Length: 108
Image (cartoon, rainbow, N blue to C red):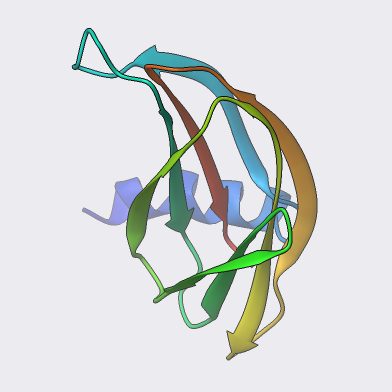
């Protein structure tokens, strides 16, 4: 599995100081949903990241952890703040619609 680490390392080096965006959105499974989902991933190897969404603390992510957070449709800002082992990632903005998932990650 040595060959699988090289692409991951290259992505981590390119996105060290900014929030990773995956602008592709996917529909949620519920046809009558009223919220959207933000999927946050901490891709760093040793930094615990605090999830700050529009100024509100949504908890923290250990290295390698992913968490899905349901949000009302609209415009939001996200910042990962390093709380141990390193720094966080720059803030980014995103729009979320009902029944859609937006992916964001930090590898710093």
